[in-house]
Length: 310
Image (cartoon, rainbow, N blue to C red; front, side):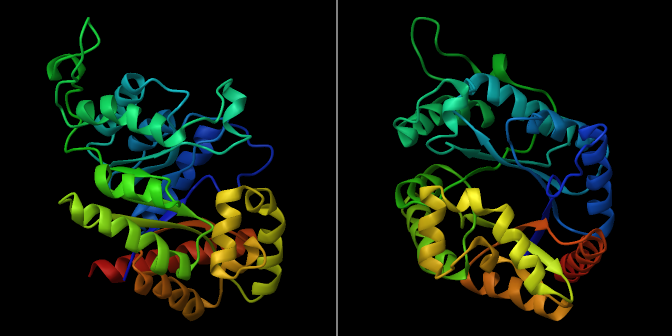
């Protein structure tokens, strides 16, 4: 089948009394349901890796994924220390997603959106050796040995995935990462664009088959039309970003609502199967719809994940 994860930050109540407590409650519920991964996005509010370290002490089985941390505002040594600390807290359950943001969004940090792929490459030159317990090359005090950057207990190796959709980023993800995390990408984009670019690069670099994690709104519901309309409205700002607009056009989707996997239990299972057949290895599900629909969806996803592990 396909690895099933849940974005526990989707549809947070407004207001929320304590966001870490709320996310911890959701993470425990997700683990109890039987899903494989708990995912957390990184926005302008809570710090994802800090929350993951907290969730690590509230859970014991699920993978804990960051989807995704923008690299430009964080020094790679700082990010490596954060990631290894969260990895140690979770006893090796972190999956680190990295991204470069978008024009108009990165500038809030006072950083212009310039040469994003080059910025990521430079970041990886320092980050990956530290995550791999290797020395960082350098001169005049810029290097470091493995012992000075080690975090005891942070093993095995942290998998690193990239928020990649374009050919250049997908090639980098295949060459130097463990896969990609997508958003607003339908089965056509996954099967005809993402998987071929990614796997070619991984094969050429002699790396294992990369993960393809697909971000999807999902609802087990008796009213798919209502759910799709709500997602079309809530996700409209994302659809105006160039990379996501191009993806929606490639899939032939008129609005972000068209990407929703919605319907009864069989329809949802069939929708996820389409992504597996296109080459996706995982889904990162945002539960949408009413509270009752989200609860019904989580139960169903847990059953699907548990069945696939048997």
